[in-house]
Length: 614
Image (cartoon, rainbow, N blue to C red; front, side, top):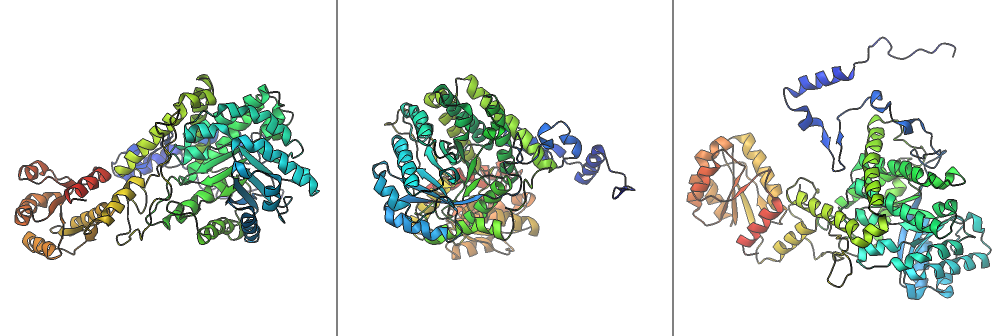
């Protein structure tokens, strides 16, 4: 068209200040910073809205998909990713049968976890029988000391079968540093195998072999900026080791693969992967590779185990689905969806099927694989990408200045920093500053464990380890321990809501109290309301209540709380829902139990269990 007309040109665009003025009016005097500004754990604030002007200084916004610095992804024409499922190999023939079966159900990337003692020509031949590696990405994890041996066997097997070596895609998960972090053992001597491993795979250019398993940090409760910054330092450490061993920088960079976790923080995780590619490209560029393609970061995203729960476990599907969406929209290379039942059992065939279908749903029905960098151009996500990149880069530089990732890992500094974050997150969950749906917020009132117990113990440091080890206690673990203890009690405690007075306040506080107390596995009984406290107490005792929670307005507690407490006369625990101004008067009368939004929920429930003899 010769003439281009801008739509809606007759309307004047409001300025940022005009938007802020309007928001201030709508808030009716409330604090803008407290109400609408998101204070992240990553060290920066997120505004409630962004405009084009907020991106004017961001250079990466002008880059294209498939081009350096790859913030918009490595692909230009589509957003295809590998749907990966891992198999624990105990019997080669059985694992082969399972692999062939799931390849017909949507999987196009296999991960085999093999014990070191099983690495042999015959074992691998049985395992890979009838699997066409030119059409499937193959990934192998085994004992770190057997990785070179495994590489030699794979190359020989592929050559014997006359497969097109240049077309094969896959990886061998060689990462001794992860063992230092996870096991607390000094395995740094094994790192010397970096060079022979890369050389063993020289005929398989599509195979990665140096892995950065920062998913271990994610599963140990690391904040997003921590996983990003440490992953970059981790990868840079391996790049240094390889080049110092005489490996060409281009070849070394092309052999590195990142296995990163992805949490439920939807937009932040999209930004994390975009920022990771941006920063990794800048790091590799300093080694002057022969082509920009060596600067591409290759990522397998794995949905988090840290936020999974034993109770209300189907909620894990909601968590892993949003996590998978984040990873897919962020243009990663492959995705592993952690089955929803992993917290309490070896995943069943049904759970694994659902996990596969979660990805297939995004591909076949939502068409996430068709569009490149959907997030590109979003003012909010572009801002988050830049902000998280800055925080991750600060951490990367701090690690480099301290001597590098390996040195910091051997000092225990990496592990200690992540464990501190885990401890803080558990404390925040205890106070409900960090919500976990179905656990410390909106628990299923009627659910029981049905015999389920945590499947794997916390991988914590012991006296036998040389170094501190990552604490992988899930965020829900302490609440689950509390609830399982309640289930084992001779009698399930009953918490009765004595609702009286102001209708709105009594209903709100009864709902809060039910959610608060049900997190311990108590049977909660809500009520429409009572005319007198005596009527309410009598009803509670008739219901055989162990806890009576008075729910009313702050003003009315001065009238109702003490008479109710005195009439109850120690026949059950008495709790006031709220923090009324008359609290000191109530305490003076002998009332000692209060629950409100500022309460330490976990600590309070542990205290109540102790009082109830649980």
